[in-house]
View (tube, rainbow, N blue to C red):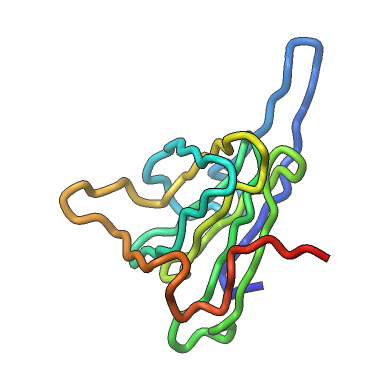
Length: 151
């Protein structure tokens, strides 16, 4: 596992009215800070990658559909520099993933329907000076290909 990446297995609590799932609490060991909560979606087979943040961690959970969430550690001095982590998260594996600052990350929707993702970054989005540094999802130096691995 990439240094400072933390996961939390989530679970649904069903009753006759529906389901409840706690995602992140301020008394969780992995909690850092609260910036904002936002929802984003990704259509089937679409890749949204690669980017990193200099000042915030992301807490990512897929609540509908399935994502292949991939992280790449390019941090100088990190004991896990060069490591890639791949997580399949969503309806069939409810999991929260903490992506530390300076770690490249992105995802691909691997479900047949649109994936719905909630992100809880530690800092609010700054519209005038976004803390977001992007590179091309396919043409880069990251040792990862987004194609499905059949076999």
